[in-house]
Length: 284
Image 1 (cartoon, rainbow, N blue to C red):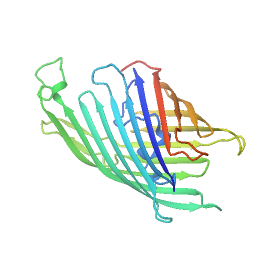
Image 2: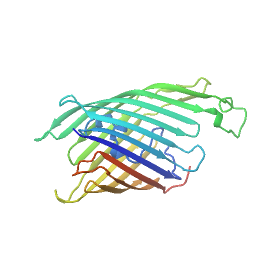
Image 3: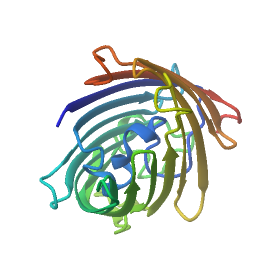
Image 4: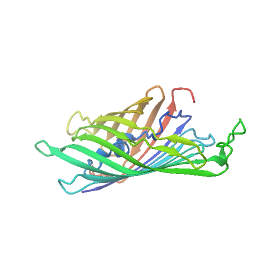
């Protein structure tokens, strides 16, 4: 079993925010466990990932997201486990999520290299508001006039089904399934929306000896009110360097590059990448 450490840094300029509550990560295809607990351990390696994302660079209170992921398989027949930790900031909002995942793997095929996985994650969501940085234009609102910070913690539950073969993967999952209400001490009220994801990808080589491998993928995400589509194509050369393009429907286009600084004979233990999002729609 080899270890794979994935470090991804991303910066997005003038990027319109998606209306859903869940976090948006451009490199979703490297970290399927962030949206689907069924992906835990399916890479059959110990995988550690760090993703940094910044939107609207230069804007006060711009969105910033950091995600840490860990995934590993257990002994044959026992499935896989994983951890996802996400910190997110948008204006006065401060969110923190921590989830632990377990996935049962059913193997089939002559080489037992196809996996149908059923995963469950449990965790906590902490949603905070820093009222002190708000500057309301209409005075007199008791909630917006507060000067303190408040937060509410709620349990979290997610479920996912994930299929993976040497060349193909598909996944269907739901997150924030408890849809908990949020009642702040000041009297402010909100709630957590359920989110659903459909994802898939394919690894293509023109021949087993080809230096190039192409990896198209997609992600559909919805909260049953708004839906967003991501389409990506990644090209990788000799497991040394990679680059790609993503189109987020009616939202943005993304260019990305990356490399494997420790690659030796196709055995990579470190992956570093960068992506830049360019908006194709108006801000707001």
